[in-house]
Image 1 (spheres, one colour):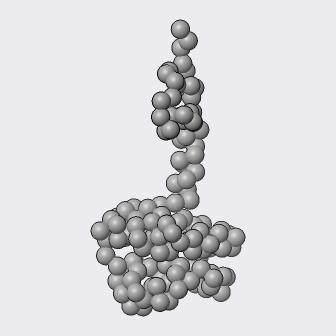
Image 2 (image 1 turned 120 degrees about the vertical axis):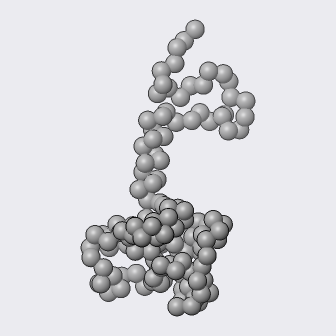
Image 3 (image 1 turned 30 degrees about the horizontal axis):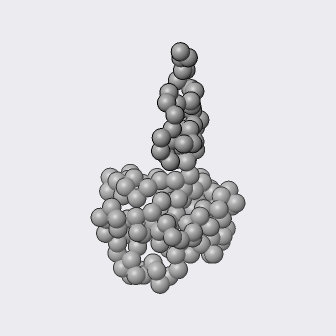
Length: 146
């Protein structure tokens, strides 16, 4: 009988489900993948906990249009619609400022567009996955107005 090393992805029995018909990645590859993913994304819970603790080392940016922002946004967020993210709008923020961007939710790619713009401007950025819908799903409140 063959012994398996921890890094091997071969399963000890034939796959029986749609989940296991494609073998999982080696543990080291999975660790690298998820570490990379966390470098690009944060979630609503972590943003909420950081804000609640007053432990804020980032600028939270709602990248939707003014009407969406006015209808309801995270209280600590500033509104910079993603098409308006440029050097002029960022002038007041030091170069190393970490930006966390969000939009309406998983059905919206505004946060991805904003993150790309910020990265092209040389700014550190993460996307808050879930956006407004994720924030609500966690039971967190939004505020209305500008």
